[in-house]
Figure 1 (cartoon, helix red, strand yellow):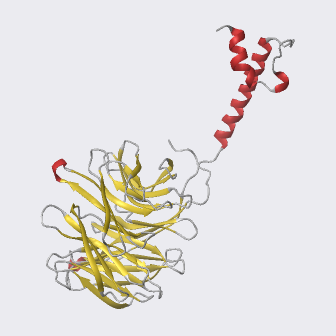
Figure 2 (tube, one colour; figure 1 turned 120 degrees about the vertical axis):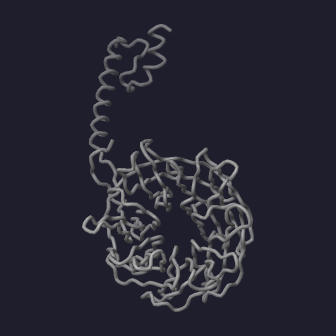
Figure 3 (cartoon, one colour; figure 1 turned 180 degrees about the horizontal axis):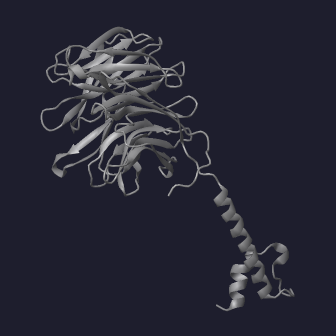
Length: 431
């Protein structure tokens, strides 16, 4: 192609109208090229200045609280925001004098994370809480497990309290095979649905869904799935008043794990069941949330953080992984963000396990990472549950691991961290 043909086809259209070369224009081609060169140079300088001056967005820690008890260790597993703007955390407490037996443990805080009260519930043997919800009367319902009452094998445990954590009643559900409850939701009729696992004849466990009335009396129960891992069973209500349950599916023949997701009707009857084996490494489901289109998002723990988007019929639409390649990234929990994207909370552990901390990832609605941030030093178990707050921030609970050199002891305490993602902060870029 000759120069004039190249110029007419590709350069002429970039010129402003008054500078375009007409057939009889006295402007020479060299002058036009000089004009373009100068223009692009100015544009490049302006864009470079803008990009260098643009602030990076960083989610900041607004406050961070630990709740220490020198006589016991505490493990936080579930957090909710309460109607007064404060928070309730449920988990387990283990007195050093009675190790390894634990009790259910609940803390109520104000909106700044300052403790208002705490309560323990348990018996002679091991008991624990994995989920807490607010009730319409201002109190709380707590689900977990008990070896102290029921069949002792263990059994599901459901506790109802008033607004100050005083127990009003408790119920156990189980039998010869027993079970451990991980997730709890309030149903539209004021009752409760509880999900966890019970033993299965063979390899792994089966999911057990229990529906009760407002006083904890069982109305029905259903089992589904087989060969499931006993790590975590997640439960959410669907828009059709049914339920979605997620867990880890273990592939014994391949020695790896995948995601398992089930949709049921309002009575726990299975509508569909799907498994998702993404990649070749073992994976553990860690979080689930409903999406605005009626589908689901699942997070997982693998070598890298993992996020799956599932449509309303159980078909996987996409999956994304997040990691830096110089360590392990655990996506422990998942919530939807205000812009229909996602926030994943977990832990980042660098190679050598001598450095790490809380890890947050923000994505858009297609799972594309918008930013990620690490905080603090490796404390272990920092993120076990997360909730989006009424003002658009996020609160994360777990447990903090500390070492007292004076007595040579390791302590585990409830931890509650408030993250502010709503304000852009001008920070230095992090490589």
